[in-house]
Image 1 (tube, helix red, strand yellow):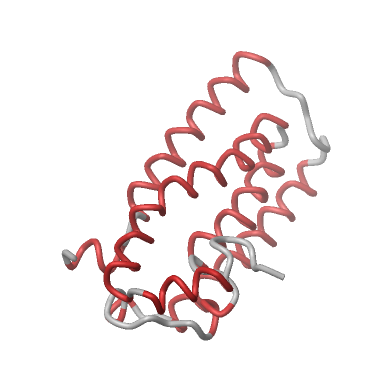
Image 2 (spheres, rainbow, N blue to C red):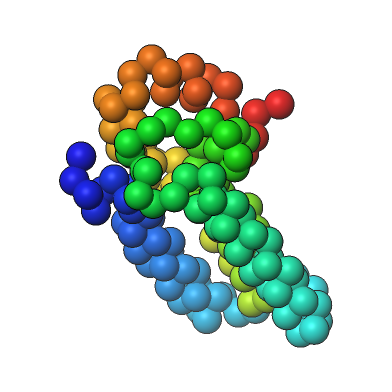
Amino acid sequence: MRPFQRIFGTGPRGLALSLATLAVAWGLSSLLGDPAIHGDGKLGTGLLIVSAVATTAGMIWSLKSLPPGSRGRKLVTHGAFRYVRHPLYAAFLLSFDFGLAFYLDNWIYVLWALGQFPLWHANVVEEERLMHKVFGQAYVAYCERTGRFIPKL
């Protein structure tokens, strides 16, 4: 595993895909008009702030649970990783994307946020294959009890 890949995983590619699909959503919203969600700028701003704070908290928890220098070197199943296999990505998928959609006040962006889940599922398959290769059956057992982005009950 190359150092860049070990530290960043598939995050940069996923970010590029997310931004590209956001640009498509922006184009569609310009083309189709503005089917508003709520029509209240203050509400949208407030929701974006709340989602940004929640995303930041998720990112910090993820980084404290598994510092970049340890990535790909040890299997971490505590902290944020106790609940989901990709807590950093989950912070964006579950919080920030929807906060942005409500801030932009358009149903097309909600569809964009929902569309990020299958996009990121496909994106992390390679990363999970590498983790399986490095950690073997321990990673398989971890996957069986832990959700990718949403905690298993």
